[in-house]
Length: 350
Ligand SMILES: Cc1cc2nc3c(=O)[nH]c(=O)nc-3n(C[C@H](O)[C@H](O)[C@H](O)COP(=O)(O)O)c2cc1C
Image (cartoon, rainbow, N blue to C red; front, top):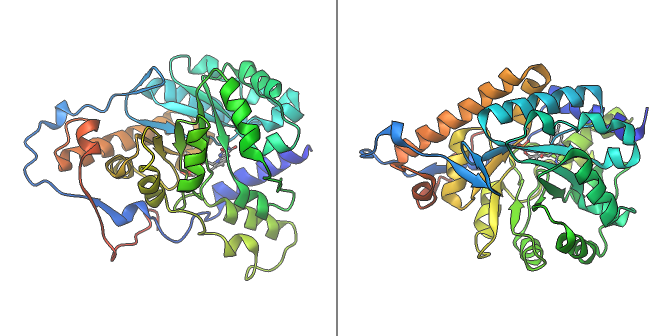
């Protein structure tokens, strides 16, 4: 089996069956200040959001996960159908595998199931140091009719992945040349360890106007690669790189607060968003919208309806959070006060 396909299958298997999160949910440390008499009608709360010209029913998309295998095709198809139904956005997993194995294209080719919502493709920024050129990127975008592209930064994951691409030299200069040429929206994202202020500022200066912080507090790619090290005969649990770096990075709420200082930058809250309440907290902290990946994976192996059920839950929770805050719309929510409670460190799922 092709090496990338094998690795991707291992990733799916680990995420579906192991505990892959840090010990703490950082977003759950924050509370929306409670308004006892909101003086609004919950039925009149508006959550509509425009994302690069696409009308979304609320400010949310399912984050990049997979592609490249039969199971991945099923996952991407189920997510595409569910997102079209619920009018939210959708990110494909990294298309590097198509660059190396063009016959895997069909697992990403799902735009036909979601013509009216934004579907973004995805590539690792480090690939620019491993031979990928502008024409290759444009070719991948065209192949799936993507409405935009995520470039992910994932050096901690690459560092722990035994076969990882570890050369991050001079990437920003190379990336600048690509960003200025691409004609579709470009978003930079991490994969669960966060983006710091200085990096975000540099990215903003070279033309990146949207960043998904994908911070610490949700899926830990350090830990996932740690499990792979164990599978591949690294016997030590104690001392395994993945376990040691499991919780490293910038917690999602801290990344939002830091990046908010960059005027004009649009911020997406990713990494550990596990409910509509987390979406609301993120927006009140300064994010424009939110995204989540792992909570949708199992449902996506089942059916579009299973994915839709989770999306509907998130939307109801967001509306409830807005009601208790007295926020009639997203603008009011974005101005709502949040308080950090030092005594509370609750992981939503534990
Ligand atoms: C199974 C799985 C596969 C993923 N594959 C990719 C990928 O190919 N490209 C990418 O940018 N991020 C990838 N991610 C990272 C997510 O897009 C997201 O940034 C991260 O999981 C944090 O969000 P979460 O805590 O809600 O899962 C993947 C996540 C999961 C769970």
